[in-house]
Image 1 (cartoon, rainbow, N blue to C red):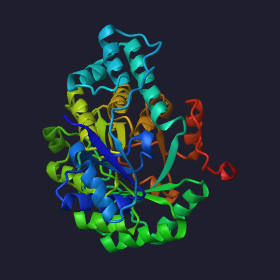
Image 2: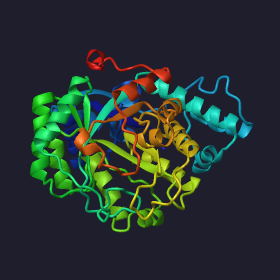
Image 3: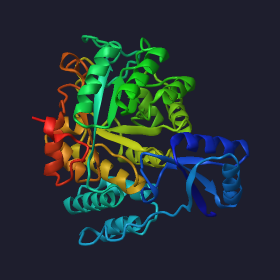
Image 4: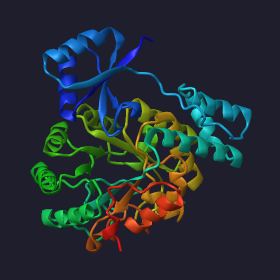
Length: 427
């Protein structure tokens, strides 16, 4: 295999223009999260083959694309991540592969996920935490979600807002959404997450209006999580100001996916993620740990999918039963398996954002702290206005994580609060 090079541009628009120019000139490109040694992992870079490097540089210069650098792509080493750790030789040999910058095989990923040995689990979490520290440092990114509609056309078996569930439904107006956004802005938070069921009442025009208003009035970064849409709609949202998009695959085992999503199309879900990457979104996905019939091999395949798809943000949470759903009586997922999945994802995918999820904090009061110590680096607040939030129950008894709980978890994990948080307004 020949060398690979990455092209880093001054902005997303320049990057998308560069990618279009290169593809039109028959140069194979791949969009990837920017390696942390070259810039923000919230940005996207273009990967090309060595033989295309000189021609690509000339084309981009001729077309006035603002390129900040072209670098040889080298898998990063993480020397010292196994220092002082104790586990079986076979287990440590796998961790040392990560230390030396080598990729893990599926068999090795499964081996890490299957361990139930306390010493091996401790070594895994410590190694992942050290890789996290080397890549993104000790500051925990804090974002906030507004769940603006609990209507959904889909009937997923695990989800509390599924179409057939009898719950109190709501839709927030644009003004109500903006009121929530301003409250988030007062805290100093830089990214708002707009999340809903798959609700076609919010037409492309309505979503675009909301996005443009948020950008105009606050300048905040915006993550959308509103399910499957057409490629043209994703393009409109991107042009209107959406920066990130979260569309969880939940499992890449096609048969398991079909059981969980009886009226969903597995291939359509994957196609949507490809579109999002092509359109220059900071692309988010994730899985659910503990789905009925799921195996460690399935979770390993999820992690490999995240890496191959160059996913930037990966949400990993345990299955939690929701009242009124077909899965209401099933047991919740395992805290330990969720933490192992977080840690292995950090070791395999490396320069990505991994949240300490609300679901984990719901299952275990110390879930946020444990995840932050196992490779996670983000916490999401539930900032849906009080009049609505109790009715957005994807799973029952959700932990309504607020800024106080988030800051407490950051401190208990001995991590750093971001400087942009406005502590003066937090009572």
